[in-house]
Image (cartoon, rainbow, N blue to C red):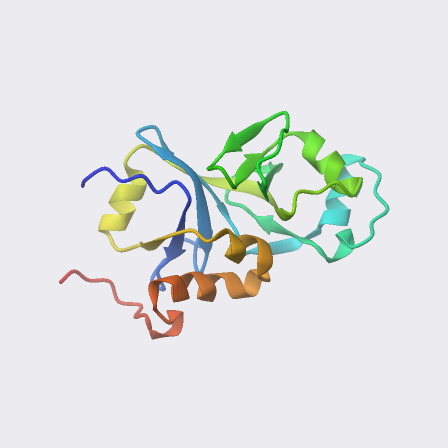
Length: 186
């Protein structure tokens, strides 16, 4: 399969996706190269709020609004580690710059800033991430496991989690409910 760079794209799990980690997920790809890919699931909230996470990390916060911010399941790798998707990119200790608008930060300085009310304008906090070995995404695409579309940060940062998958599908002009569970090639 021809090499493709899916950085700053959404991966949309097809209805036939049997993997319980990725069934009905929308994943934002932060990095894709010959070494593999790294992404964050952006539509699967877990039973944890930002306030709960602050408490677990020992970060004091006034809590105002933090109890209403869900933490996402970012993927099955490093579930004990926080990943913050944000815009603007900013100047944090450990940030992967996805593009000029979006960064992925893993350092505590961003969490402390959020607790202090100095949050980036766009924010998604996840535990864990999704990773693919070299060529794995390309192979999965050849099996029709995913649809891809260039990402729209507004879907991540402005919509509730339950609306993100359908919104990404609309970028393709497709209604998710109209997709078949059957996999095939024409």
